[in-house]
Image 1 (tube, rainbow, N blue to C red):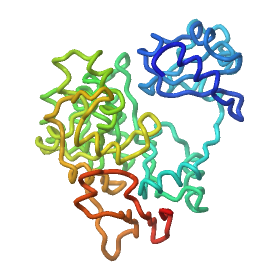
Image 2 (image 1 turned 90 degrees about the horizontal axis):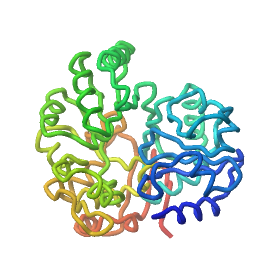
Image 3 (image 1 turned 90 degrees about the vertical axis):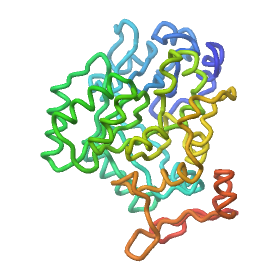
Image 4 (image 1 turned 180 degrees about the vertical axis):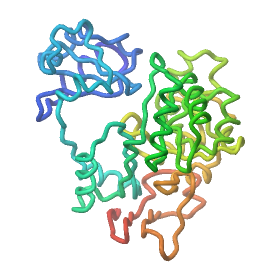
Length: 362
């Protein structure tokens, strides 16, 4: 959708979930401006509606939705995603993980990482049980409780360093969500203050100032980034981000040149779920309109493919096929040369997970 009318049509046609809500994700202000309860009331059906901002940090609820969560008098309906004072009232919405798993298997995906920062023990047990029963075929790794999302208006260096040290004392690494330069700068400073341990990672590094590259390498951090956002949102970046900062967006090649360990992901559901499309984006960095966003960050097809082959606990370390390792295979129907030339999901002939066939092309 590209405008207010398109958003209104999408909401009007959206099914109401079993929980009574219409739920939308990925909203950007370029569609209809900053969204609030008043605007949402004007364009949404008279049922509870919640729309997640593309940043993932904010939900906007209409009046029916605010009433449902006990916030009928809220001034604008713009609520922080991480605020349990309202999100706990939603309860858990069921997701058809079996269908999602089948779709990912068609792409050749053998493992997924859940980066939800506030997963509790019950959530993790549920995912584990779904995997055991075969409804979720892919191996699952959860970053919680070591995942932290930052907000520019609430950056506290000492508090972040204290949380990192606490997680390290508990024996686990940290994964810190950095989508702005300020978040990355504070995270680097906090990790320098608290110290690092193997497995510490930066999620996204969407904006990486030049002097941060040396710091990331020196600290031994892994960056898990998503160049697919260049292909999905690149025109918005070109229009909204100052030209002098374009070179800092969604770096890949310069991180590698600086000696930083880099892995790729799709960031589904905020990004599209096709890893092959993300690989193509890493190679070409072409926006939806055909512009190229910072060609110096392009990598080869082999590099892009390899950056999706990492271990769950070491995403920048490619897995190998040899005795003693998990029997996870993505079998392709064409030659290696064609694979690298096309990087297309249609080439997946079969997917094997833990030695069992999870997908076979018809």
